[in-house]
Amino acid sequence: MTKLLDNSSAGIILRCFGYYLPKHTVSNEELSKRLETSDDWITQRTGIKSRHVAAEDELTSDLAYHALTNALKQASLTPNEIDGIIVATSTPDLTLPSTACAIQKKFCPSISKAFAFDINAACSGFVYALTIADGLLSKGIANRIAIIGADTYSRIVDWQDRSTAILFGDGAGCFILERSNSSTDSCIMAAKLIANGSLYDILKTNGGISSGNCNAKLEMNGREVFRHAIEITPNIINETASQAGISVKDIDMIIPHQANARISTAIAKELDLPASKIASTIEQHANTSAASIPLTMANYLERGLIKKGQIIALCGFGAGFTAGCVIMKV
Image (cartoon, rainbow, N blue to C red; front, side, top):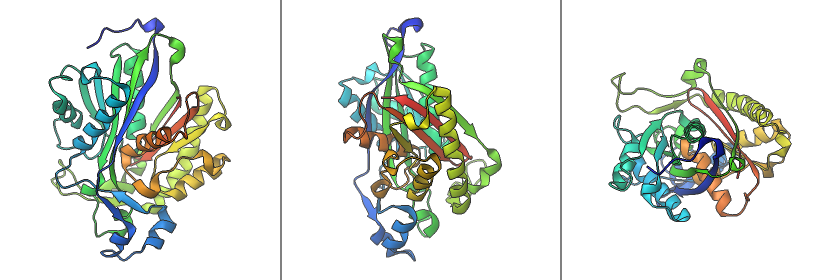
């Protein structure tokens, strides 16, 4: 591990980003051949046109490994300069060890002394992980942390269930946060995390390890997820903006979890913001769960649609029912 900076003088910056999408894509037209649906029906209700699907031999850790490799290359960093790996996922390779440790293994021995762990907050997971990393860096526990959102929901959706099969795709996105020599550099302005367990049943798998059903598939009450997402998300963005000492109007771009284009439209309307301020990649990526926020931000950064110095709100919502928002300056 690298020598730690003095807490009193350290800031935290977004050093770089990386992402990975599986090569294989499945279009709406392909789905319509095996489901009672059509391209028009899916597009009108979700905004999705296609999704990336992991190959049979691709695991969640493989997607995450490629995303981290991409980030390291972008910043000319070596793996041994990473002090920690936090992976947000609800589709881990194995029950144990963690997917973060599986990624670490792929880099060994060069990254063998970093800490590594997973968190599961479903589609809010990346925002949760980013907030945890910010706290660890602020406390001087590490100088540089890789935060990865990665999921392979193609493994847990029922491909015969039209209500869920059309929605999800696979992918991974990565940020590397690091401590800097100036406290004025800190990019995280404010964060808020919440969960409401009374909504536990509206989005879940129908089994798991301790229930004895290891072939569980995803089940969703789409109407209830929609209703709570458009209620919770604007509220948490407003509250986090207030915590940061800014107005929602001061935010240059909102990057919501990419669940449904209609949810994003409703969020913009509720916040009285133009659609141009709500980032969207759902058309080609679909819902990639914990990967959707870093994938979308990486896409916008790469295309120059987010620029240095701008204020960005990252907001997630998902099974649990979890939600989170981070407001940061790029």
